[in-house]
Every structure is written in C-alpha cells, then in structure tokens.
Image 1 (cartoon, one colour):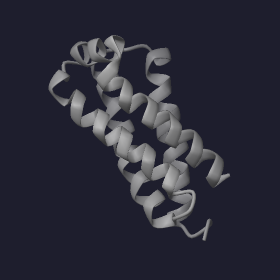
Image 2 (cartoon, rainbow, N blue to C red):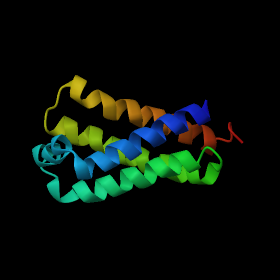
Image 3 (cartoon, rainbow, N blue to C red):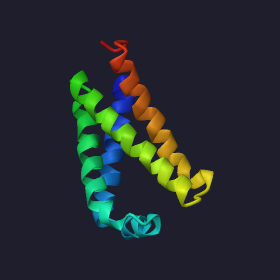
Image 4 (spheres, rainbow, N blue to C red):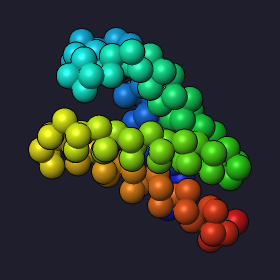
Length: 114
C-alpha cells in the first residue's frame, strides 16, 4: 500500500510542481488565489516532495519528511480554496492528496510500515 501511494503521490506532485512553472492554467490559478508571489516556491516544494515520495519507496525517513511537508502544503491549499469560495469539486483534488499522503505519513509515523 505504501509503495503504491508513494508512487502515485510522487508522480502527481512532480507533475503538478512542474506545472506551476510551465502551465498557463496553473500560473493563472495562482493569480486567482491571490498568491502569485508563492507560485515558484509552491512548485519547488511540490517537485521536492514528489521526488521525496519516490525515494521514500526505499527510505521511510525520506517518505515521512516528504509526506509531512506535502500534507501541510495540501491543507493550506484546501484552506485557500475555502477562503476564495471554490466549489467542493474544485477543492476535492487537494483534499484527496491531503488524505492520500497524510495517511501514508501516519502509517510510517505510527510504525505500521516498519
């Protein structure tokens, strides 16, 4: 289970992190959020977290750090979307990734995954 969630999260966050730099849609979304000055930072953190998830398949400490950081990033994303009155449909991906990566981190922290 951990490997699957780590790989899914890792690939997704690398993709979304790179999209912060390359996608006009993502660039415009940060303007819509009122957070355009944080776009580069968020992109870097997502890429680093995604790589951490992929490396974390082989190293629990790296996965724990990556999952903690990405969980914080995703809960902040949920709060931003609530603040700007996005719909549940628009907020759902951040909620999904928060639970996916948060659950993985919780299992490692609690010792369930060695």
